[in-house]
Length: 393
Length: 180
Figure 1: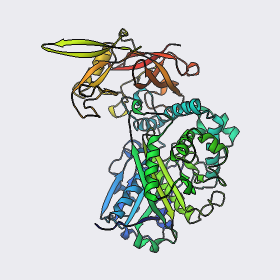
Figure 2: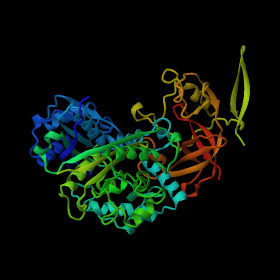
Figure 3: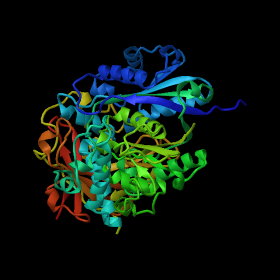
Figure 4: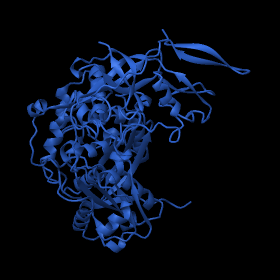
Protein backbone atom coordinates (compact mmCIF):
# COMPACT_ATOMS: atom_id res chain seq x y z
CA UNK A 1 0.00 0.00 0.00
CA UNK A 2 1.46 3.31 -1.02
CA UNK A 3 1.47 6.30 1.27
CA UNK A 4 -1.07 9.02 0.57
CA UNK A 5 0.21 12.49 -0.10
CA UNK A 6 -0.79 15.68 1.64
CA UNK A 7 -2.58 18.25 -0.51
CA UNK A 8 -2.74 22.03 -0.23
CA UNK A 9 -4.57 24.93 -1.82
CA UNK A 10 -1.73 27.20 -2.90
CA UNK A 11 -3.70 30.17 -4.21
CA UNK A 12 -6.60 31.33 -6.26
CA UNK A 13 -8.78 34.25 -7.15
CA UNK A 14 -12.30 35.43 -7.80
CA UNK A 15 -14.12 37.57 -10.31
CA UNK A 16 -16.33 40.36 -9.04
CA UNK A 17 -19.58 38.83 -7.76
CA UNK A 18 -22.87 40.56 -8.58
CA UNK A 19 -25.27 41.24 -11.41
CA UNK A 20 -22.71 41.11 -14.18
CA UNK A 21 -23.18 42.08 -17.85
CA UNK A 22 -21.35 39.06 -19.26
CA UNK A 23 -21.97 35.46 -20.30
CA UNK A 24 -21.20 32.18 -18.54
CA UNK A 25 -18.17 31.59 -20.78
CA UNK A 26 -16.93 35.14 -20.24
CA UNK A 27 -17.07 34.54 -16.47
CA UNK A 28 -14.81 31.52 -17.02
CA UNK A 29 -12.36 33.70 -18.97
CA UNK A 30 -12.29 36.23 -16.12
CA UNK A 31 -11.65 33.37 -13.67
CA UNK A 32 -8.63 32.40 -15.77
CA UNK A 33 -7.37 35.98 -15.83
CA UNK A 34 -7.59 36.35 -12.05
CA UNK A 35 -6.19 32.86 -11.37
CA UNK A 36 -2.98 33.39 -13.34
CA UNK A 37 -2.60 36.88 -11.84
CA UNK A 38 -3.09 35.56 -8.28
CA UNK A 39 -0.73 32.58 -8.64
CA UNK A 40 2.20 33.93 -10.69
CA UNK A 41 4.16 30.67 -10.51
CA UNK A 42 1.34 28.74 -12.17
CA UNK A 43 2.06 27.60 -15.73
CA UNK A 44 -0.90 26.43 -17.78
CA UNK A 45 1.11 23.45 -19.06
CA UNK A 46 1.66 22.25 -15.48
CA UNK A 47 -2.07 21.86 -14.84
CA UNK A 48 -2.73 18.15 -15.37
CA UNK A 49 -6.36 18.10 -14.16
CA UNK A 50 -9.38 20.38 -14.19
CA UNK A 51 -12.52 20.15 -12.07
CA UNK A 52 -15.38 22.52 -12.88
CA UNK A 53 -18.01 23.19 -10.22
CA UNK A 54 -21.16 24.33 -11.98
CA UNK A 55 -24.61 23.69 -10.59
CA UNK A 56 -26.91 24.33 -13.50
CA UNK A 57 -25.30 25.55 -16.71
CA UNK A 58 -28.03 23.65 -18.60
CA UNK A 59 -30.67 25.86 -17.01
CA UNK A 60 -28.80 29.14 -16.61
CA UNK A 61 -26.83 29.11 -19.87
CA UNK A 62 -28.37 26.25 -21.94
CA UNK A 63 -24.92 24.66 -22.02
CA UNK A 64 -23.81 21.19 -21.03
CA UNK A 65 -20.35 19.61 -21.17
CA UNK A 66 -18.80 22.66 -19.58
CA UNK A 67 -15.48 21.19 -18.44
CA UNK A 68 -13.88 21.36 -21.92
CA UNK A 69 -15.55 24.74 -22.42
CA UNK A 70 -13.83 26.05 -19.28
CA UNK A 71 -10.51 24.49 -20.33
CA UNK A 72 -10.72 26.38 -23.61
CA UNK A 73 -11.80 29.65 -21.97
CA UNK A 74 -8.93 29.46 -19.45
CA UNK A 75 -6.30 28.19 -21.86
CA UNK A 76 -5.83 24.85 -20.11
CA UNK A 77 -5.18 21.44 -21.67
CA UNK A 78 -5.66 18.94 -18.84
CA UNK A 79 -4.23 15.51 -19.67
CA UNK A 80 -5.16 13.45 -16.61
CA UNK A 81 -8.62 14.25 -15.29
CA UNK A 82 -11.12 16.72 -16.70
CA UNK A 83 -14.68 16.79 -15.41
CA UNK A 84 -17.55 18.84 -14.07
CA UNK A 85 -18.74 18.39 -10.48
CA UNK A 86 -22.40 19.07 -9.69
CA UNK A 87 -23.85 19.20 -6.20
CA UNK A 88 -26.17 22.20 -6.48
CA UNK A 89 -25.01 24.84 -3.97
CA UNK A 90 -21.97 22.71 -3.05
CA UNK A 91 -20.71 22.25 -6.63
CA UNK A 92 -17.64 24.41 -6.01
CA UNK A 93 -16.57 22.51 -2.92
CA UNK A 94 -17.18 19.30 -4.88
CA UNK A 95 -14.62 20.45 -7.45
CA UNK A 96 -12.09 21.03 -4.65
CA UNK A 97 -12.88 17.71 -2.96
CA UNK A 98 -12.46 15.87 -6.27
CA UNK A 99 -9.15 17.60 -6.99
CA UNK A 100 -8.02 16.80 -3.44
CA UNK A 101 -8.96 13.12 -3.84
CA UNK A 102 -7.20 12.89 -7.21
CA UNK A 103 -3.96 14.39 -5.92
CA UNK A 104 -4.05 12.40 -2.69
CA UNK A 105 -4.48 9.21 -4.72
CA UNK A 106 -1.54 10.05 -6.96
CA UNK A 107 -3.63 10.55 -10.10
CA UNK A 108 -2.87 14.27 -10.31
CA UNK A 109 -0.06 16.58 -9.17
CA UNK A 110 -1.39 20.02 -10.11
CA UNK A 111 -5.14 20.48 -10.37
CA UNK A 112 -7.29 23.55 -10.92
CA UNK A 113 -10.76 23.71 -9.36
CA UNK A 114 -13.04 26.26 -10.96
CA UNK A 115 -16.54 27.45 -10.05
CA UNK A 116 -18.79 29.32 -12.44
CA UNK A 117 -22.43 30.36 -12.23
CA UNK A 118 -24.38 32.90 -14.26
CA UNK A 119 -27.76 33.32 -12.55
CA UNK A 120 -29.10 36.69 -13.61
CA UNK A 121 -31.08 36.09 -16.79
CA UNK A 122 -33.42 38.24 -18.88
CA UNK A 123 -36.24 36.12 -17.35
CA UNK A 124 -35.78 35.72 -13.61
CA UNK A 125 -38.84 33.43 -13.53
CA UNK A 126 -36.80 30.94 -15.58
CA UNK A 127 -33.90 31.36 -13.16
CA UNK A 128 -36.32 30.69 -10.27
CA UNK A 129 -37.45 27.51 -12.05
CA UNK A 130 -33.80 26.45 -12.20
CA UNK A 131 -33.58 26.92 -8.44
CA UNK A 132 -36.85 25.05 -7.87
CA UNK A 133 -35.65 21.92 -9.68
CA UNK A 134 -32.78 21.53 -7.20
CA UNK A 135 -35.53 20.23 -4.90
CA UNK A 136 -37.76 17.20 -5.51
CA UNK A 137 -39.29 18.79 -8.60
CA UNK A 138 -42.51 16.78 -9.25
CA UNK A 139 -43.35 16.11 -5.57
CA UNK A 140 -42.18 19.24 -3.72
CA UNK A 141 -41.35 22.03 -6.18
CA UNK A 142 -44.60 21.62 -8.14
CA UNK A 143 -46.45 22.58 -4.93
CA UNK A 144 -44.44 25.78 -4.72
CA UNK A 145 -41.32 24.74 -2.82
CA UNK A 146 -38.25 26.83 -3.48
CA UNK A 147 -35.42 27.65 -1.12
CA UNK A 148 -37.00 30.70 0.61
CA UNK A 149 -40.17 28.96 1.88
CA UNK A 150 -38.14 25.91 2.91
CA UNK A 151 -35.69 27.90 5.05
CA UNK A 152 -38.62 30.04 6.26
CA UNK A 153 -40.25 26.90 7.71
CA UNK A 154 -36.91 26.00 9.31
CA UNK A 155 -36.79 29.48 10.88
CA UNK A 156 -40.40 29.26 12.01
CA UNK A 157 -39.80 25.95 13.78
CA UNK A 158 -36.50 27.15 15.29
CA UNK A 159 -38.29 30.22 16.66
CA UNK A 160 -41.06 28.03 18.07
CA UNK A 161 -38.80 25.36 19.56
CA UNK A 162 -35.90 27.52 20.79
CA UNK A 163 -37.18 31.09 21.04
CA UNK A 164 -34.95 32.38 18.25
CA UNK A 165 -35.91 35.93 17.21
CA UNK A 166 -35.98 38.06 14.06
CA UNK A 167 -33.43 40.26 15.82
CA UNK A 168 -30.99 37.36 16.06
CA UNK A 169 -31.51 36.54 12.37
CA UNK A 170 -30.74 40.19 11.59
CA UNK A 171 -27.56 39.91 13.72
CA UNK A 172 -26.25 37.25 11.29
CA UNK A 173 -27.08 39.38 8.28
CA UNK A 174 -25.60 42.55 9.78
CA UNK A 175 -22.33 40.78 10.70
CA UNK A 176 -21.88 39.19 7.28
CA UNK A 177 -22.81 42.35 5.36
CA UNK A 178 -20.33 44.32 7.50
CA UNK A 179 -17.55 41.87 6.54
CA UNK A 180 -18.64 42.10 2.88
CA UNK A 181 -18.06 45.86 3.08
CA UNK A 182 -14.34 45.07 3.30
CA UNK A 183 -14.38 42.53 0.45
CA UNK A 184 -14.25 44.19 -2.99
CA UNK A 185 -15.36 40.98 -4.79
CA UNK A 186 -18.59 40.86 -2.73
CA UNK A 187 -21.90 41.62 -4.43
CA UNK A 188 -22.81 43.99 -1.57
CA UNK A 189 -19.31 45.49 -1.08
CA UNK A 190 -20.66 49.04 -1.24
CA UNK A 191 -24.12 48.50 0.32
CA UNK A 192 -24.67 49.11 4.04
CA UNK A 193 -27.20 47.04 5.96
CA UNK A 194 -27.61 47.95 9.61
CA UNK A 195 -29.92 46.16 12.00
CA UNK A 196 -32.83 48.60 11.69
CA UNK A 197 -32.65 48.65 7.90
CA UNK A 198 -32.62 44.84 7.75
CA UNK A 199 -35.76 44.60 9.88
CA UNK A 200 -37.57 47.05 7.58
CA UNK A 201 -36.82 45.15 4.36
CA UNK A 202 -39.79 43.43 2.70
CA UNK A 203 -40.71 39.83 3.49
CA UNK A 204 -39.70 37.26 0.86
CA UNK A 205 -41.05 34.20 2.68
CA UNK A 206 -42.27 34.99 6.20
CA UNK A 207 -40.57 35.12 8.68
CA UNK A 208 -37.63 35.69 6.31
CA UNK A 209 -37.04 39.15 4.85
CA UNK A 210 -34.93 40.14 1.87
CA UNK A 211 -31.88 40.62 4.12
CA UNK A 212 -32.22 37.06 5.43
CA UNK A 213 -31.73 35.60 1.94
CA UNK A 214 -28.62 35.30 -0.22
CA UNK A 215 -28.90 36.58 -3.76
CA UNK A 216 -28.96 35.32 -7.31
CA UNK A 217 -25.43 36.18 -8.33
CA UNK A 218 -23.10 35.94 -11.31
CA UNK A 219 -19.55 35.01 -10.39
CA UNK A 220 -16.61 32.70 -10.90
CA UNK A 221 -13.37 31.74 -9.24
CA UNK A 222 -10.53 29.26 -9.34
CA UNK A 223 -8.02 27.72 -6.95
CA UNK A 224 -4.91 25.62 -7.51
CA UNK A 225 -4.28 22.45 -5.51
CA UNK A 226 -0.93 20.70 -5.58
CA UNK A 227 0.79 17.72 -4.03
CA UNK A 228 2.98 18.38 -0.99
CA UNK A 229 6.30 18.09 -2.79
CA UNK A 230 5.30 20.90 -5.19
CA UNK A 231 3.87 23.36 -2.65
CA UNK A 232 7.02 25.48 -2.18
CA UNK A 233 7.09 26.42 -5.87
CA UNK A 234 3.76 28.22 -5.46
CA UNK A 235 3.49 29.70 -1.96
CA UNK A 236 4.98 30.08 1.50
CA UNK A 237 1.56 29.91 3.15
CA UNK A 238 -0.27 26.82 1.86
CA UNK A 239 -3.74 25.94 3.12
CA UNK A 240 -3.37 22.22 3.87
CA UNK A 241 -6.50 20.15 3.53
CA UNK A 242 -6.51 18.12 6.74
CA UNK A 243 -10.03 16.73 6.99
CA UNK A 244 -13.22 16.15 5.02
CA UNK A 245 -16.69 14.84 5.69
CA UNK A 246 -19.91 14.68 3.78
CA UNK A 247 -23.38 13.34 4.42
CA UNK A 248 -26.56 12.92 2.37
CA UNK A 249 -29.66 11.63 4.09
CA UNK A 250 -32.90 12.46 2.23
CA UNK A 251 -34.33 14.21 -0.81
CA UNK A 252 -38.10 14.64 -0.50
CA UNK A 253 -39.08 16.90 2.41
CA UNK A 254 -41.32 14.20 3.87
CA UNK A 255 -38.18 12.23 4.63
CA UNK A 256 -36.42 15.00 6.58
CA UNK A 257 -36.41 13.89 10.19
CA UNK A 258 -36.15 17.34 11.76
CA UNK A 259 -36.32 20.79 10.22
CA UNK A 260 -34.16 22.29 12.97
CA UNK A 261 -31.72 19.55 13.96
CA UNK A 262 -29.35 19.05 11.05
CA UNK A 263 -27.92 15.68 12.00
CA UNK A 264 -26.38 15.30 8.54
CA UNK A 265 -24.15 18.27 9.29
CA UNK A 266 -23.30 16.90 12.71
CA UNK A 267 -22.17 13.67 11.05
CA UNK A 268 -20.26 15.39 8.23
CA UNK A 269 -18.44 17.75 10.59
CA UNK A 270 -17.63 14.97 13.06
CA UNK A 271 -16.02 13.02 10.22
CA UNK A 272 -14.11 16.12 9.13
CA UNK A 273 -12.90 16.77 12.70
CA UNK A 274 -11.97 13.11 13.10
CA UNK A 275 -9.90 12.99 9.92
CA UNK A 276 -8.23 16.32 10.77
CA UNK A 277 -7.60 15.36 14.39
CA UNK A 278 -9.07 18.59 15.78
CA UNK A 279 -12.37 19.74 17.29
CA UNK A 280 -14.73 22.73 17.21
CA UNK A 281 -12.68 24.62 19.82
CA UNK A 282 -9.59 24.53 17.57
CA UNK A 283 -11.25 26.52 14.78
CA UNK A 284 -10.12 30.10 14.28
CA UNK A 285 -12.48 30.79 11.43
CA UNK A 286 -15.30 29.05 9.63
CA UNK A 287 -16.84 29.74 6.26
CA UNK A 288 -20.35 28.41 6.87
CA UNK A 289 -23.11 28.20 4.27
CA UNK A 290 -25.33 31.18 5.21
CA UNK A 291 -27.67 30.88 2.22
CA UNK A 292 -30.24 32.18 4.73
CA UNK A 293 -29.61 33.73 8.15
CA UNK A 294 -31.30 30.81 9.93
CA UNK A 295 -28.84 28.39 8.24
CA UNK A 296 -25.84 29.95 9.97
CA UNK A 297 -27.52 29.69 13.40
CA UNK A 298 -28.36 26.01 12.99
CA UNK A 299 -24.88 25.32 11.62
CA UNK A 300 -23.28 26.69 14.84
CA UNK A 301 -25.37 24.16 16.73
CA UNK A 302 -24.89 21.16 14.43
CA UNK A 303 -21.11 21.63 14.22
CA UNK A 304 -20.86 21.91 18.00
CA UNK A 305 -19.85 25.56 18.34
CA UNK A 306 -22.73 25.99 20.80
CA UNK A 307 -25.45 23.80 22.35
CA UNK A 308 -28.58 22.97 20.37
CA UNK A 309 -31.06 25.84 20.31
CA UNK A 310 -28.53 28.49 21.31
CA UNK A 311 -27.41 29.65 17.85
CA UNK A 312 -29.32 32.91 18.22
CA UNK A 313 -27.60 33.78 21.50
CA UNK A 314 -24.23 32.76 20.05
CA UNK A 315 -24.43 35.40 17.32
CA UNK A 316 -26.14 38.02 19.49
CA UNK A 317 -23.29 37.76 22.04
CA UNK A 318 -20.69 38.31 19.30
CA UNK A 319 -19.16 34.88 19.71
CA UNK A 320 -18.96 34.34 15.91
CA UNK A 321 -17.51 37.82 15.27
CA UNK A 322 -14.00 39.23 15.52
CA UNK A 323 -13.03 38.98 19.19
CA UNK A 324 -15.35 36.01 19.75
CA UNK A 325 -14.79 32.24 20.00
CA UNK A 326 -14.05 32.10 16.26
CA UNK A 327 -14.93 34.24 13.26
CA UNK A 328 -17.73 32.92 11.08
CA UNK A 329 -17.91 34.14 7.50
CA UNK A 330 -15.25 36.87 7.53
CA UNK A 331 -15.48 36.85 3.70
CA UNK A 332 -19.00 38.28 4.03
CA UNK A 333 -20.77 34.98 3.59
CA UNK A 334 -23.31 34.16 0.94
CA UNK A 335 -25.47 36.92 2.40
CA UNK A 336 -22.91 39.63 1.75
CA UNK A 337 -21.02 38.22 -1.25
CA UNK A 338 -23.96 36.75 -3.15
CA UNK A 339 -24.29 33.07 -4.01
CA UNK A 340 -23.21 32.08 -7.52
CA UNK A 341 -23.80 28.40 -6.73
CA UNK A 342 -20.75 26.74 -8.26
CA UNK A 343 -18.43 29.64 -7.38
CA UNK A 344 -19.35 29.88 -3.69
CA UNK A 345 -17.26 26.90 -2.54
CA UNK A 346 -14.28 28.23 -4.51
CA UNK A 347 -14.71 31.69 -2.95
CA UNK A 348 -14.71 30.19 0.56
CA UNK A 349 -11.43 28.37 -0.17
CA UNK A 350 -9.91 31.57 -1.58
CA UNK A 351 -10.89 33.37 1.63
CA UNK A 352 -9.27 30.69 3.80
CA UNK A 353 -6.12 30.83 1.68
CA UNK A 354 -5.95 34.65 1.87
CA UNK A 355 -6.76 34.71 5.60
CA UNK A 356 -3.86 32.31 6.23
CA UNK A 357 -1.58 34.56 4.15
CA UNK A 358 -2.83 37.71 5.91
CA UNK A 359 -3.81 39.16 2.55
CA UNK A 360 -7.33 40.39 3.37
CA UNK A 361 -8.48 43.82 4.54
CA UNK A 362 -7.62 44.44 8.20
CA UNK A 363 -11.33 44.95 8.98
CA UNK A 364 -11.93 41.26 8.42
CA UNK A 365 -8.53 39.70 9.07
CA UNK A 366 -8.74 36.96 11.68
CA UNK A 367 -5.72 37.29 13.99
CA UNK A 368 -3.12 34.63 13.17
CA UNK A 369 -5.54 31.90 12.05
CA UNK A 370 -4.34 28.29 11.97
CA UNK A 371 -7.47 26.14 11.59
CA UNK A 372 -10.42 26.87 9.31
CA UNK A 373 -13.60 25.02 8.42
CA UNK A 374 -15.48 25.36 5.16
CA UNK A 375 -19.05 24.13 4.95
CA UNK A 376 -21.65 24.01 2.21
CA UNK A 377 -25.13 22.68 2.39
CA UNK A 378 -27.02 21.93 -0.77
CA UNK A 379 -30.70 21.61 -1.66
CA UNK A 380 -32.98 21.53 1.36
CA UNK A 381 -30.01 21.06 3.72
CA UNK A 382 -30.13 17.40 2.68
CA UNK A 383 -26.43 17.26 1.84
CA UNK A 384 -23.66 18.73 3.98
CA UNK A 385 -20.06 19.02 2.77
CA UNK A 386 -17.29 19.96 5.18
CA UNK A 387 -13.55 20.52 4.79
CA UNK A 388 -10.95 21.51 7.37
CA UNK A 389 -7.83 23.46 6.48
CA UNK A 390 -4.62 24.13 8.41
CA UNK A 391 -2.23 26.97 7.69
CA UNK A 392 1.23 25.89 6.63
CA UNK A 393 4.51 27.77 6.39
CA UNK B 1 -57.53 7.72 16.58
CA UNK B 2 -56.06 6.15 13.51
CA UNK B 3 -57.38 7.38 10.23
CA UNK B 4 -56.52 4.01 8.73
CA UNK B 5 -58.73 0.94 8.85
CA UNK B 6 -57.66 -2.58 7.93
CA UNK B 7 -59.84 -4.38 5.40
CA UNK B 8 -59.38 -7.86 4.01
CA UNK B 9 -59.50 -8.17 0.25
CA UNK B 10 -60.00 -11.39 -1.71
CA UNK B 11 -58.48 -11.78 -5.13
CA UNK B 12 -59.14 -15.28 -6.49
CA UNK B 13 -57.72 -17.67 -3.94
CA UNK B 14 -55.54 -14.98 -2.34
CA UNK B 15 -56.58 -12.78 0.54
CA UNK B 16 -54.66 -9.78 1.72
CA UNK B 17 -55.06 -7.07 4.29
CA UNK B 18 -55.30 -3.53 3.05
CA UNK B 19 -55.29 -0.30 5.00
CA UNK B 20 -57.82 2.27 3.91
CA UNK B 21 -58.54 5.76 5.10
CA UNK B 22 -61.62 6.04 7.29
CA UNK B 23 -62.56 9.44 5.95
CA UNK B 24 -64.75 9.41 2.86
CA UNK B 25 -62.86 10.24 -0.30
CA UNK B 26 -63.48 13.68 -1.68
CA UNK B 27 -64.66 14.16 -5.19
CA UNK B 28 -62.19 15.96 -7.47
CA UNK B 29 -62.80 19.68 -7.60
CA UNK B 30 -62.22 22.15 -10.32
CA UNK B 31 -58.86 23.83 -10.06
CA UNK B 32 -58.75 27.20 -8.36
CA UNK B 33 -57.66 29.97 -10.68
CA UNK B 34 -54.69 30.52 -8.37
CA UNK B 35 -53.29 27.02 -8.89
CA UNK B 36 -51.51 25.55 -11.90
CA UNK B 37 -49.76 26.97 -14.93
CA UNK B 38 -51.99 29.13 -17.09
CA UNK B 39 -50.62 27.55 -20.22
CA UNK B 40 -48.79 24.35 -20.99
CA UNK B 41 -45.09 25.01 -20.58
CA UNK B 42 -42.34 23.21 -22.47
CA UNK B 43 -41.65 20.01 -20.54
CA UNK B 44 -38.29 21.24 -19.24
CA UNK B 45 -39.96 24.25 -17.62
CA UNK B 46 -42.99 22.32 -16.33
CA UNK B 47 -42.74 21.54 -12.62
CA UNK B 48 -45.64 19.05 -12.57
CA UNK B 49 -45.09 15.30 -12.96
CA UNK B 50 -45.57 13.28 -16.13
CA UNK B 51 -48.52 11.04 -15.35
CA UNK B 52 -49.17 8.73 -18.26
CA UNK B 53 -48.36 5.01 -18.08
CA UNK B 54 -45.98 5.50 -21.01
CA UNK B 55 -43.86 7.77 -18.82
CA UNK B 56 -44.19 6.48 -15.26
CA UNK B 57 -44.94 3.31 -13.37
CA UNK B 58 -46.68 5.52 -10.80
CA UNK B 59 -49.60 6.27 -13.15
CA UNK B 60 -52.03 4.62 -10.66
CA UNK B 61 -51.28 7.44 -8.20
CA UNK B 62 -52.61 9.97 -10.67
CA UNK B 63 -55.53 7.74 -11.66
CA UNK B 64 -56.46 7.63 -7.97
CA UNK B 65 -56.26 11.42 -7.74
CA UNK B 66 -58.75 11.63 -10.61
CA UNK B 67 -61.09 9.53 -8.47
CA UNK B 68 -60.55 11.85 -5.52
CA UNK B 69 -58.44 9.31 -3.65
CA UNK B 70 -55.10 9.99 -1.95
CA UNK B 71 -52.83 6.95 -2.09
CA UNK B 72 -49.22 5.92 -1.84
CA UNK B 73 -47.21 2.73 -1.96
CA UNK B 74 -46.50 0.29 0.85
CA UNK B 75 -43.86 -2.42 0.77
CA UNK B 76 -45.45 -5.87 1.00
CA UNK B 77 -42.29 -7.28 2.56
CA UNK B 78 -41.47 -4.87 5.35
CA UNK B 79 -44.77 -2.97 5.52
CA UNK B 80 -43.16 0.46 5.12
CA UNK B 81 -45.50 3.19 3.87
CA UNK B 82 -43.41 5.24 1.44
CA UNK B 83 -43.62 8.86 0.30
CA UNK B 84 -43.40 9.82 -2.43
CA UNK B 85 -44.80 6.63 -3.99
CA UNK B 86 -42.09 4.32 -5.29
CA UNK B 87 -41.58 1.21 -7.36
CA UNK B 88 -38.82 -0.27 -5.17
CA UNK B 89 -38.68 -0.20 -1.37
CA UNK B 90 -35.57 1.74 -0.27
CA UNK B 91 -35.30 -0.28 2.96
CA UNK B 92 -35.43 -3.88 1.66
CA UNK B 93 -35.11 -3.25 -2.11
CA UNK B 94 -38.16 -5.32 -2.85
CA UNK B 95 -40.14 -4.40 -5.95
CA UNK B 96 -43.32 -5.81 -4.44
CA UNK B 97 -45.22 -2.70 -3.44
CA UNK B 98 -48.95 -2.17 -3.10
CA UNK B 99 -51.17 0.88 -3.22
CA UNK B 100 -52.73 2.00 0.08
CA UNK B 101 -54.99 4.92 0.88
CA UNK B 102 -53.54 7.80 2.89
CA UNK B 103 -55.39 9.78 5.55
CA UNK B 104 -57.04 12.76 3.90
CA UNK B 105 -56.85 15.08 6.90
CA UNK B 106 -54.02 16.48 8.97
CA UNK B 107 -52.64 19.49 10.77
CA UNK B 108 -50.16 22.18 9.82
CA UNK B 109 -46.68 21.50 11.22
CA UNK B 110 -44.90 24.46 9.57
CA UNK B 111 -45.75 26.94 6.85
CA UNK B 112 -44.57 29.93 4.91
CA UNK B 113 -45.53 31.78 1.79
CA UNK B 114 -43.58 32.70 -1.30
CA UNK B 115 -44.20 36.42 -1.77
CA UNK B 116 -41.63 37.06 -4.52
CA UNK B 117 -39.41 35.09 -6.88
CA UNK B 118 -41.84 32.56 -8.34
CA UNK B 119 -40.79 29.99 -10.93
CA UNK B 120 -42.10 30.39 -14.45
CA UNK B 121 -45.80 29.53 -14.62
CA UNK B 122 -46.36 30.39 -10.96
CA UNK B 123 -45.74 34.16 -11.11
CA UNK B 124 -49.46 34.99 -11.15
CA UNK B 125 -50.12 32.72 -8.17
CA UNK B 126 -48.22 34.76 -5.57
CA UNK B 127 -48.53 34.84 -2.65
CA UNK B 128 -48.19 31.10 -2.65
CA UNK B 129 -48.95 29.58 0.77
CA UNK B 130 -47.18 26.28 1.43
CA UNK B 131 -46.32 24.08 4.35
CA UNK B 132 -45.79 20.72 5.95
CA UNK B 133 -48.80 18.69 7.05
CA UNK B 134 -48.78 15.97 9.70
CA UNK B 135 -51.31 13.46 8.40
CA UNK B 136 -53.75 12.25 11.04
CA UNK B 137 -52.84 8.84 12.39
CA UNK B 138 -49.80 8.50 10.17
CA UNK B 139 -46.10 9.16 10.71
CA UNK B 140 -46.00 10.95 7.35
CA UNK B 141 -45.38 14.69 7.19
CA UNK B 142 -46.06 15.88 3.65
CA UNK B 143 -45.30 19.13 1.90
CA UNK B 144 -47.97 20.86 -0.14
CA UNK B 145 -49.76 23.99 -1.29
CA UNK B 146 -52.37 25.43 1.06
CA UNK B 147 -55.67 26.59 -0.41
CA UNK B 148 -58.31 28.84 1.11
CA UNK B 149 -56.13 30.80 3.53
CA UNK B 150 -54.28 34.11 3.60
CA UNK B 151 -50.72 33.52 4.84
CA UNK B 152 -51.26 36.15 7.55
CA UNK B 153 -54.11 34.04 8.96
CA UNK B 154 -52.24 30.75 8.74
CA UNK B 155 -51.19 29.07 12.01
CA UNK B 156 -49.33 25.94 13.08
CA UNK B 157 -51.87 23.32 14.16
CA UNK B 158 -54.72 24.37 11.86
CA UNK B 159 -56.58 21.41 10.35
CA UNK B 160 -56.28 20.76 6.62
CA UNK B 161 -57.91 18.37 4.19
CA UNK B 162 -56.48 16.77 1.06
CA UNK B 163 -57.99 18.08 -2.15
CA UNK B 164 -57.54 16.62 -5.63
CA UNK B 165 -56.97 19.15 -8.38
CA UNK B 166 -57.33 19.03 -12.12
CA UNK B 167 -54.73 21.02 -14.01
CA UNK B 168 -55.94 22.87 -17.14
CA UNK B 169 -54.31 20.29 -19.40
CA UNK B 170 -56.20 17.49 -17.66
CA UNK B 171 -53.41 16.23 -15.44
CA UNK B 172 -54.23 15.54 -11.80
CA UNK B 173 -52.45 17.01 -8.81
CA UNK B 174 -53.34 17.76 -5.21
CA UNK B 175 -53.17 20.37 -2.49
CA UNK B 176 -54.36 20.88 1.09
CA UNK B 177 -57.35 23.07 1.96
CA UNK B 178 -56.99 24.84 5.29
CA UNK B 179 -60.02 24.81 7.61
CA UNK B 180 -59.58 27.70 10.03
